[in-house]
Amino acid sequence: MLEYRGYDSAGIFVPGSGAIKAVGPIDNLAKKITATIPGTSGIAHTRWATHGEPTELNAHPHTDASGSLWLVHNGIIENYREIKEKLLSQGITFASQTDTEVLVKLIGTLYKGDLRQAVMDALLRVRGTYGIAVMSQEHPDEIVVAKMGSPIVLGIGHDGNFVASDPSALLAHTKDVVYLDDGEIALVTKDGYSVISIDGEHREKLPEKVEWDIEAVQKQGYEHFMIKEIFEAPEVIANTIRGRLLFDKGRAKLGGLESVINELASLNRLQIVGCGSAYYAGQVGRYLLEEYAGLPTEVELASEYRYKRNLPDKKSAVLAVSQSGETADTLASIRSAKQMGVLTLGIINTVGSTIARDTDAGVHNHAGPEIAVASTKAFISQLTVFVLLTLLIGRERGMSQEVGVEIAEALRTLPETLIKVLTQSEEVKAIAEKYANYSDAIFIGRKFHTPIAHEGSLKLKEVAYIHAEAYAGGELKHGPIAMLDTNFPIIALCPQDDVYEKMISNIEEVKARKAPILAFATEGDVHITELATDVVFMPKVHPIVQPIVTTVYLHLLAYYVGLAKGLNVDRPRNLAKSVTVE
Ligand code: G6P
Image (cartoon, rainbow, N blue to C red; front, top):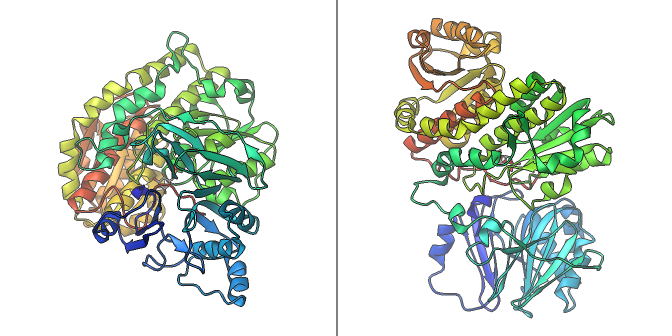
């Protein structure tokens, strides 16, 4: 079961043996299962609460009025109230507060012996997002799955078939997978599968091979996935740039964008959309594309973009950044851009994901599966793709070959630099232990490092529960400085770039207020040691890749602060890795 997708409660149903549910992590469910459950098929689920608290009654699987049909669901049924009212008027009662129970009760009223037909009939009455798996006691050898907005993947094995919301759950059994598309319903048995559209048309779907191995989704001796994924940085960057640089020409080659290269060269404007860390990666992308490629770029939170009036012209494009390729708001933004007739692009880590398939063209990160809830390796890979994209578009829009060669070289040497960065992990750990005692922090940076300050602060909130904020250095004096005292540290990102002196002025302002200062500076910077309480020295690199280097330090910092506080860094409270609800 994919615990990172939800972990406030879990449940399992096996025909003939009934359902078992427990609140809390999967371990709690495992403890309740004291003997092997007899049976050869079943469905199980980990929940991330939306409708109703994490209780046993609200945990999935849910059942219909007869107790014969059982269902697990990711997503949200938007018109569940309406349907619930109707069902209540028919005398049907509900045990939970969930929208999911409404769906299975509805399927129950339509069931006349053919489960897939009943699911189809019910889904025609439903609005919202879902990835569902349904079983009936009468036909224990069948699982019916359906997808709309939330991922469903089938695993085709030699001694049985599987369904999951992410291929990583299937790797121990098979690498042959079938990704369902929105509006598709599949009937899966031990020996086969068949897929139809919601209106009954047959769909021919052949299995694809998952590229990575089971090791990629295991901890391999690390204490947590988060630290394993941070330590994968050199390899991740090498994988992201592999085969994508033409060193002599100072150019980038991105196969997934070749079909749209002329459009990219003559764009008037690029709008980037994303959520969480992916949004901050987009912010860095904006600075890089404007600075080096001269491309006017905007960045929008996907949850805002989809509801606001956007004013694209024919020569603009919308670019989604998403690790999972399934984030509901990012997907909706791409769909709304498509409706406006705009070119849609993606920087997506998960091959086969909905956004990867919905966009006109795009780039895969090749960062491998990311398991820790808070994004680390995918984020630095997103930044790397933005450097590649800047090179690609920049060279089409007047960037000199000389600058192009410098950027390509900066990327080529980056994995080596990151190996060196990671040797400083013990040093960052010692500093993290010191800063773990504060309850607040403000991160400051300028230009390329403004979004990195935001990323550092987001990570510290996510995995260490420290109240952290981030500001562009110049904004500190316009309000946040009022907060500072000896108990309120500032984390200053001040590599020696073209805004270094401005950052130094900001740090002076902080020092005058006696706040502790933790600086991330360039090695050899003697001035900073006079100003800061603690300094972590970073290797000097080309400014275009500096945000990637700085980020690795901030990810280590957040990880070690979380660790010092004894927190579950891989699965922070209240968070989910793949947010397939709005
Ligand atoms: C969740 C994760 C974040 C991630 C965000 C966007 O909130 O906890 O780490 O940045 O979703 O996810 P995506 O898959 O679209 O990159």
